[in-house]
Amino acid sequence: MREPHSNYRVPPIDEHRERTETFQWLSRVNRTFLKSTGMIMKDLVLQKVSHVEKAWGGIPLFETSEIVKQVTSFQNVPLIISEFKNPEGKDYIAVVNNSQRENTEMEIQVEGEKMYNIGWMGKEILISAIRPGTGENLIKIRQWLAPGQMELYRIEGQAVR
Picture 1 (cartoon, rainbow, N blue to C red):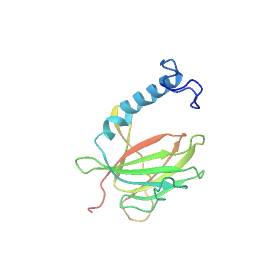
Picture 2 (picture 1 turned 90 degrees about the vertical axis):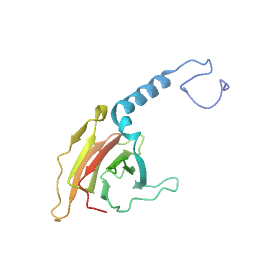
Picture 3 (picture 1 turned 120 degrees about the horizontal axis):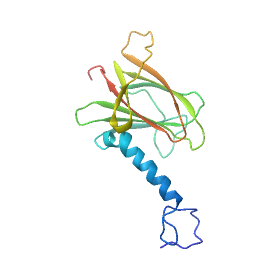
Picture 4 (picture 1 turned 135 degrees about the vertical axis):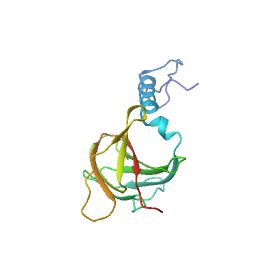
């Protein structure tokens, strides 16, 4: 049991072993995650992680990958880009706004024919994509992200690797 005067303010369980408002906030965030992308993410295998704008913890800054060709944070807010595969070999990308305070409009360009946003209860929503005039199999989207917000996408139709 922690000391009442310890430095952590309003922990999920307080010095009286009672749930606090922090417990309720964390409970809601966890339940929302489980009902949105959580049921998909539990089966995904992490392939690569990188940062945009600023890197922490030994994770590298973003460099072009086989799937993700470009990522931009228009307000220079740090992002985390994670690449995954599911057991069937389908590619997924997670983009997280790594700021606790600032919104950002991000743009991501990926190799593929279709890009789906994973929504509530794992529903896949086809994203309207802008195709750059390069003649390549590329999809470019823009989306606003709130502080800490994560979006999960499934990419379909990549070139054979």
